[in-house]
Length: 445
Image (cartoon, rainbow, N blue to C red; front, top):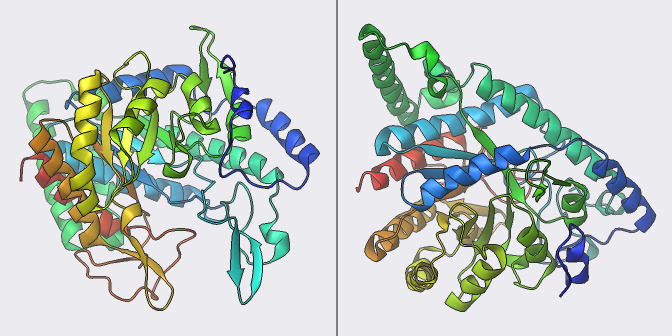
């Protein structure tokens, strides 16, 4: 074992890394990324860790949501604003119902790389490298597009920076003010049952604010009413890119990944002595680990020791992705093992990935009923075990897409507006409907 450094992951087996055709091109791109300013700051990551520590104790709830994979082409101020809108709406619903702060954590401003089950994709007898996200290559099925291109790492950095700049402006500059709550309801959502239910909550919040003002409370002085803390996250998949954006904090002398506030390691790359866990073990950001249905108590305890050796509340989150039936079988043992160990982790439910299937016509989709079933199972197991359901991890879009089946609007024809870059995501109505279902669970329903 070597001492940890931002490059020590290179001494460990690294899964899911692209086959970059030109090492000198890659090195040149990473040198440019390393010379760029940080995207996030150590103090922001510490603030998120404090918020996650509250969720670990049942005093907050995490909403982690956003794109399955961000696209270079889907990039505009309106798109960023509208993605933020639906997450803010969902957070209001969850906070209003539960009385708990909602930790808002976006899959945004950096989710440009995806792990793949196969390194190659075959169409019509032609095999090409798999699409690995826009930070690596393009989805068009031709050799030039599928070549891993290191210059895309720079484009991913710049798009992340621009996205984060606008998010900061919106969340701190007045757009996230609770007095703007009605403006977050997009037109195609507002006329749906979910949108009307949201408007009822917004009306009650308006009334409460007017009542407090009438009682002489100075609402203008409380920043919590006028701005929100919004954090960004992505899977720490491309380790060269993550290393290039690792910085030593001037206040503490500790290393932080400055590509996102929170990074997670995926189900395919969570080997305790693999390169991804090695990298994340040394940065001081809050981190997360995906757990699939094969996870065992010994697996999670070894990950706890590697990633959270000092048992710091808020340092480590486990994101379960198992399917409802397997979750009910597997999760109780994991909760007991981690609880007995003294680690205080945040348990988050990802109900998306274990519920993906392919239709007879070859289209990947998910059923909203399956997604909700896994969320309900997650809450039920935690209640039975006396532990805290800490949050949910959802893939969604602000757009009126038809990629997941069902929901209150009963999407049944996927071909109408199917735009998935990788995996199918919830549209805004489906996502808001799920927020109301989760709010009922938070109230004990």
